[in-house]
Length: 243
Image (tube, rainbow, N blue to C red; front, side, top):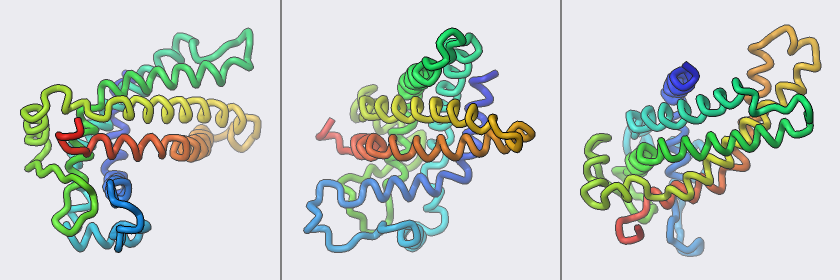
């Protein structure tokens, strides 16, 4: 049940976050393998300009590029990640009653383990999602664009060109991304939750406690995971010659 709920909730969220993911992917790929001094104009500089560029080149539908693959990625990644961590938590492996000071370290450990397993399960979907989101009808400064006609076509094309290895391109970076991200998210969420519950206003509202803890955890996760995320996106979208 933990696996199913974790995946289902993330699929609902991705309907709203996928446009932001498209913008992030375009920004991370812009100027790839181009020296800074040779990059005359940036089409994806800042949030507003990125939105404008996507709409101008690909229309409003461009903001939801790769949505089917993104749904599959989020389900495979979060169902395994959250389910694995929750299972460890149910067994009491994420806390130490005898040595409370070890609890944050245990949360880091199991958060990282959950990230490792989820990276393995979701890597092929991340590859397809990224390649679909990177393609644009307008001028683009990314080094490579993989022109797939759809999600199923992308899986078939990648497998025909590079086999299973192609579906796991960028796997080491994906593992680093999710291990760092999951460890930071799970550990910071647990610490923040315990901190907020010291105050009465949070003791009276489970929703407020979860919202506040998630906000703080999301901030630390984004900051720590961002470098790995850039590397993962670029490795995932690289051409066949660089495999």
